[in-house]
Length: 168
Image 1: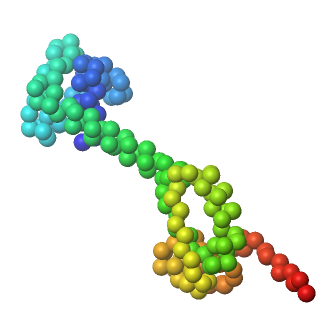
Image 2 (image 1 turned 90 degrees about the vertical axis):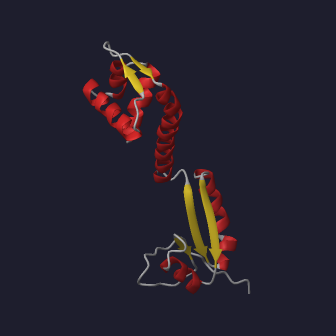
Image 3 (image 1 turned 60 degrees about the vertical axis):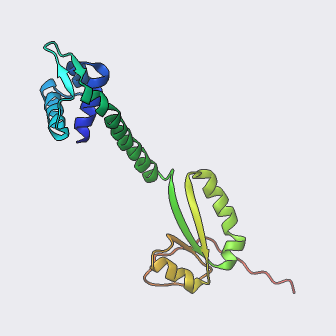
């Protein structure tokens, strides 16, 4: 149906089946088939076609055009939103972390991440290491940052080594 709507909008704007077919990189018969299918689906004639490729909107076509334009635009916006999500420009990331990590390590990491990905919303849930691992297992967070605890069900790696220093 999207191809039919795009064909209709293009013909309506160009007032020419031939010009619209060229703009959409389809043959004129293919574009005409799309228009015919759309008119069948809508249940009325939307365009009056002329012998030399010209086209004029009917009253129904003028009424339908705004809806068709919004539908085509909505799909284009949806495609852009999906592309932005796939590129990491938008979305949501939930992070689970232990209290020590959230206090001393996470602020710097989140600052850099937010600067690099301003359209991504971050959510932080804190808990002891065992609780964070359960959040990861239940897929309530995408990332768990804890001091140390290994679990064979979860892929893990060392983010940094911390050296303890005594002042005695």
